[in-house]
Structures are given as C-alpha cells and as structure tokens.
Length: 336
Image (tube, rainbow, N blue to C red):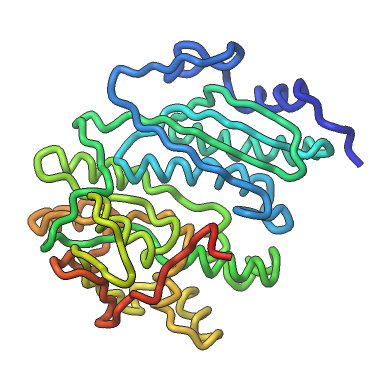
C-alpha cells in the first residue's frame, strides 16, 4: 500500500513535467491566479474527465488517461479553428494514489501539451474517492481573425467530416468486454478510444479558408453524428423536435467502404448495421462541418482526411443512405 498523497508531493510531481515559465504566460503558477498573454480574442472551453464515467483505470494506463483528458479539450479548440496556448488542471485524487501512476499521468499530459505549445497555467487539487479531472483551456483565434462556430449552415451547403467515425465506440465496447486484451484484436479501435488525436491542423486550415469566404460551420463529434449533426443544423436557434422537426435538414451518404475495417468487422460479428453503429458512435473527436459548395474542391485538396458526406436541405429531417435517422439519438450522459 503506497503512502497517502500530500499536496506538496502532488505539486512537486507536477512541477517536474510542467515548467513555470512559458511563452504564453506573463505569470505562471504559484500565485492565486496566472496571467496569460492575450493580444487578441480568446476561445475558452472546459471539460470533465471522471473515473468510471469517462474512463476506467482497469484498462486505461495513466499515460492514456493523461493524454485523453487534455486531448478532448484540444479538440474543442480544433472545432473553433483556434490554436490552444494555455490550460488549467483541477485534479481530485484518492488519498492512496500511487505516485508512479501520477508521474506517468503528468508525463503523458505534458508531452501532448508540449507538442501543441500549451502552457499549464494553474489549477487545484483535492482528495476524492475516485480520480476527477477538470480542465479549462484557452486558445487564440487564427491570425485571419476567423472564429469557426456551429452556426451558419444554410440549404445547399456541403456537409463534411474530418477523421474516423464509430471507431472509438468499437474500442469502448471491446475494452469494456475484454479489458486490455482487446488491444490484440482491435488495435485501431482501442487506440481511438484511449488516445484520440485532436484535429488541430485541420481546424486551423478551415479557419484560414474562411478568411476570404463565408466561414465553414464546425464542431467536434463527441456524441455521434446522429446527435451532433442536429446540433450543427440547429445552432442558429431553431429547436429540434422529434415530433415536429423544423428545417434545415440534411441528406447524408455514408457508404460502408468509408468506415474503418474494425468498425465493419465489429458490426458483422454482432450482426449489426455498421453505418448505424458509426452514426451513434461517441468520442470520435472527428470534426463535422458544412461549407459553401464553391469551397468544397479547395477544402478536399487542402485538408487531409476531409470527406464530403452530404448536403444541408431546406426540408426538415435527416436522411442517411435514404433512411430517416429519427430513431437514432447518439450518446447522452443522462440517458440511463
């Protein structure tokens, strides 16, 4: 049994991985607040990452937990076309936390932060029964001055995704069923769930493309296209209603060949429709957006992983491969 944690031990471990000085900070950790360098509008986003809600220590290594906790926040910046530069970390830890686990957790998070030039500006620690992680992240909008929001889709716009669909859902299912032995047979799916890759470069490219045209509408896919596409289409204020849907709507095409082979294999093994599984898959952290038709060819060429999947329609409702999606709803934390 490892000795109980103390605040000084936890902070000392953190300091080995995150420097106090950083180009994004005027004043780093140590005072009651930090000072960020901000000469332009800022994007800010927050996420919780809770043990036995968002991850399980039974099959997440500490490195994977540290990576994913920060990656999901970076993905929010990608969805706005913003470049992240600082974050705060609030951490609840069980009193008997193994310091080897904590060191590995910090190390992986610091590696991802360093890759994207992000400073740790501060945070808080407390004792909890399980590991609780809360991160707030700041980003600067692109030099072009373009912020990519969810609103702005109009009938005739092209719908697109950047990244894989449904793969993280397969990883979650296999890890829940088989633990880490699932990595042997489902390596890509498990990696998609354990260590997602935020699409920062793609978000910045899309913001740059919007500088001289109507900017794309954009969001990241955290709860599955079946739920998130409705959020994109109704971001201007129209409320989605299953009984009385209002426009705009969408027609999307998602052939099985566009899905990862592990998504198709999992569906085949379980006698399920792979497209349906991809539509409800959460935690993909791919990007979903719409753009004017005259931007489509340029974006296909410029943005790696860009896939045109359909169009926005004036008529309400969503069709995928000519089938209505009214019975698909994606992930909901409160759907018990």
